[in-house]
Amino acid sequence: MLSRRETSLLRALTTRGGRRRSEFCRCEGVRAVRELLDKRPDMVEFVAATARGFAALGCEPPNSRRLDETEFAALSDTVTNQGVLALARVPEERDELPSGDFILVLDRIGDPGNFGTMARTLLAVGGSDLWITKGTVDPWSDKAIRSGMGAQFALNIRRFDDLGAMTVAAGKYGFSRIFYADPHQGENCFRCADLYERSLIIIGGEANGSSELPPGTRSVRIPMPGNYESLNAAQAATVLLIEHTRREQTE
Image 1 (cartoon, helix red, strand yellow):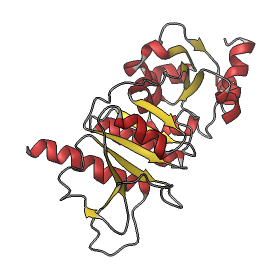
Image 2 (cartoon, rainbow, N blue to C red):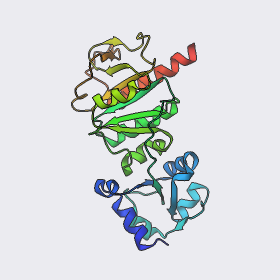
Image 3 (cartoon, rainbow, N blue to C red):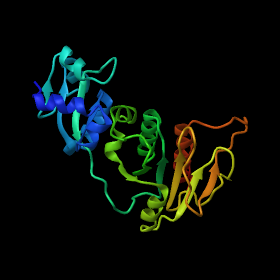
Image 4 (cartoon, rainbow, N blue to C red):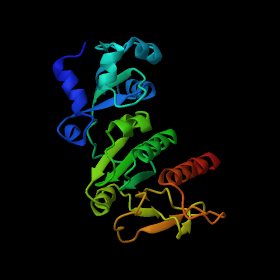
């Protein structure tokens, strides 16, 4: 059973205003909750699930809440729910030396599905640092967490007002190269030798691209012999992230 306070909190967290006033987020779905339990069990306040949900999860974690199907459906943010969700603390932002060769930057990415795909792909290739600007989707919204399958909890996500403030922060740690994924012009991303050498790689918003780019930013493009207009933002990020892995595997 959930207390009234717990029920109210879970419902409030489905709204941006509710999340802004809270240190918690919701994590719904079997794969997302598994990732949370695996990567950051210390962040979990409790898991609420139906009998079906616990069976799919494969365990009943400590401090769990068992709900019937009607109770869970009233809390779920999905049309067809999987019967399991967790209340988790949002990880604190860490002002620390990025641990990889590059920082993936999302500038005004508005679609939770794109955001989640990029977070998941970054984690899959061994990346750790995901920096975002104001205007990018909330990383801790239900939709973003479901799309990322909980990858957010294993990444160091930092938020900045704009790209200018971000580059100042990155410069403190020697990340001085700045690249922008441009759909039409710039250096060939497969031939840009220093693309991943302590750099920021910016993916711009789906509709209008990036905001004002910092001085010294270099454009890189993904060659498209088919002469198509552009790739989806998440597709473009995936190409650039996999290229980093390809280079590491061939060294």
